[in-house]
Image (cartoon, rainbow, N blue to C red; front, side, top):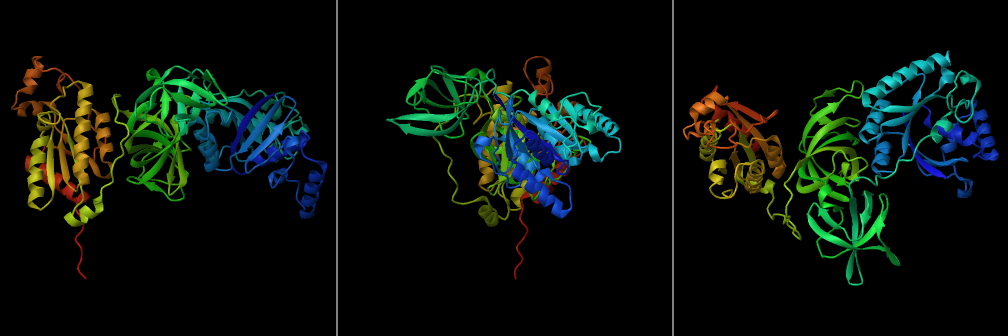
Length: 615
């Protein structure tokens, strides 16, 4: 007998609980005594029988095939066992969709004939789309309230099909229902005599179980590490793929590798573990592995990076703004992240994006999150728990989301068994002592755009004002720290990473750091921001190519056009113009003094503390 897990979604007044209550009655899983009690209490109040009340404090022995906890109802028919999960709000729906790749087999969306698709229904349908559901069963309920049930059903059916088509979701079936009278829930009724399709129960029976992906990339998510008989046993769950004895694994994000020597299955052992099963393994090397790590084959690794672009639904009572630090829970790992940017907020009515400075309760948004630690996550991997996450604030879950992109890192040998120290003097203490905070002001632009010239001028101006300031110049660093790097894409990325790491350390020490680097690629600049998200500002030093070439006293443009310099930005290698920098200064239209003054004003507004007023 197959077991199907069904999540019920729809507006709070659409009748989801009434449908479940009527289903229990019509398949004979409510005792006559309980039904008589419900009828009597309804009659005393002078109201029609309310089948949703059956779900309140409803308890029957397990051998009667019904068990109800807060939001789950077990129902057994001759052909299948159903576990219905009611989702009365966004928080409950997100919790259930995030709880596991195979937790929910299919959704049932309930739409009231008198109200149609409400805003809550639109939002929940968006969540279903994000979590990979491409098929959905729809029940059009409350047809007993319509003057012409058939016409009302046809109108709502057209509305539902048009809405779901926008999301790329296909309705498995759209079924007419009048749950209060029992029409077309389990048995056909007079109200829907014109309907020759399935009843709701028949349509439910046609749903297929959503299995964990055995053919997907191997994802073994570590839950804990135990010591046993002098060795270590690593315990976790195979989220997708198949784990086999004897194969080499790489554990991310620390990038440590070892071979599986045993898959423990007390009191013996087994050769393989399929997707969806827990596993306990032993390795041939004592590599560092802890809770939150994820193992894969080297050829099917997750994405690595410090920056996530993600689609979230905000559930917190208080809104969130750019700059706030939250706790990200991905797989079994929890790390702090900062909301760097709100890319867009999605209007659930039109599905169109809009701008916003904060995300309020119930909003759905695309955001950029940054972390100081390396994150291992999946993008567009169906069923992977590494593609889903929650955000917590003060211990409470305030958002759920899906990973859309990871700003990557070059994969190599990572440092292991290291823990970063926390400074004995924090940034706020340094700011109070210095009169200003630290910050990274990242000047990016074409060669000869004027980055270093402006940076040096501003450094002098800040220094004369008593600020702690330093310039990290790209050319200078390539003669010292980055002398071993060339100009291919990988080396350019590493040049940015190293410079950003140094700049972040200086800023943490209370310095105002001006970084003058071409840094032509947007992803690399995003990675630089992740190195010090507390106070990082991207400054685009804009200049047209012709003006930059005229200024080039080093002759680099001329040599690049003769083919003597390969991969030269602006000639033989692209420059990705920042789409939304924190500040843009045009050195072709304004002189050095004016550009430096604008940047000086910007910096002082961002980091200089207001003077203390004596009392």
